Image (cartoon, rainbow, N blue to C red):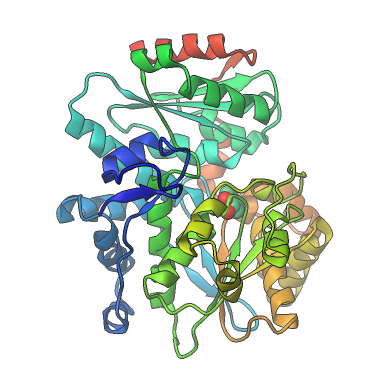
Length: 437
Ligand SMILES: *Cc1c(COP(=O)(O)O)cnc(C)c1O
C-alpha cells in the first residue's frame, strides 16, 4: 500500500517515507492511497478469535510492505496488554484501552510507531541514530518515551513546560534515562511546540541529525488505532445491532481511525465524537464552518485542543461532504460540571470509576441518546486509567482510587531533566549532543 497527502500535491510514497516524514511536503497529512475492504464473512470468521489474530488480519491489509512474520511481532508487541470490554449499566461496553505502560490509549499508537521506526532504521543500516523530538503537555511524552525506551537506533527528546505537568505525568518520562532525554523548557507548552517546529525547519540541524516526530498526525500512530476497533467489535457478545461507538476526542486521531475502520467494512452504527468545552468540531458539524479557537483548560486536559489537526484526515475521507459526515458522526460538548456528574453517577450507580476523559464520552453518549440521535448498544472507548487523574476523581467520588503498582513504583524513582530557556539555539546544541552520546 502507498500513502498520499490529504492536500494531493505530493506523489504517493511508501510506508517508510510516510512514517519518517510525519507531515507530507505539501503540508498535508498522509492517508492510505486506497482503503482495503473486509467482507462480512471475513469479519464473522474473526469473531471470538484472540486479539493478536484479529489485529494481524486487519494490519496485513494496510501494511503489506512488512513481511508477515515481522508484522505479527510488531502488532503483538504494540498490543502487549489486556484490552477488556467491560459492561457498565444500560447496554454500554466500556473498552479499556488504558492498561499499557503509561495507562492511556496513546501507548498503542506510540508503541507501534516506535517498533516500526526501529525496524526501518535497522533496514537503513545508517550509523546515525534517529532522534525523535516531541513536545508534550502531559500524556504524549510518557507514551512516546516508554514506547521508544531501549529501541535500538533511536533516541528520544521530550520537551515539556517546566513546572506545568502533573508530577505523575512528569515521572513517566523523566525517570527512564537510557535513550530518553527529558528537557524542561522554561516557558509554556506553546513555546515547546514552537521549538519543535523551528528545529524541524532548521536546515543546518537537518544535516547533522536525523530528526523525526511522533505527534498525533503520525501515520505510524494512526494505523494501529484502526486495529482496536475491530478487536472491540469481534469481542462483543452480540452483534445483531451495529453498535454506536463513543470516542472522547481532542486532536481527532482516534476518531479518524474509527471512521477508517467503518469505511473498510466494520459494521458500526454512528460515532459519538465527544469533546469537552473545546467544541470546534461540534460547531463545525452544526454550522459547516471550521472555526478553530484557542484551547481552554478543562479537567480532561489531554482533550484541550482548539484546532484539531486530524480533522483534515476526516474531511479527506468524506471528500469534503459534511452532510455525509453528519450521518456518521454526532459530536457533543460537555463542560467540567457535566463531566464530574458523569463520574459521580457512574460510580454511585454501577460502582465503576471513569477518568475525566472517558467521562466526557459517557456524558456525550447520554446526550446523544436523549436526543434520539443514537440507540441500542454502545462501545465507549476508555482512554485513560482513572488513577492517572486521581486527585480530581477522588474529590468527585469521595473515595480512594488505588494506584496501579507500575505507577506507584515510578513515583519513587529520581527524575532527570535538563532545563533550558525557550531558545532554538539551546535546543539545537542539545540535540547535537544527544546524537554524539
Ligand atoms: C490524547 C487523548 C485523548 C484524545 O485523543 P485524540 O486522538 O487526540 O482525539 C483522549 N483521552 C486521553 C486520555 C488522551 O490522552
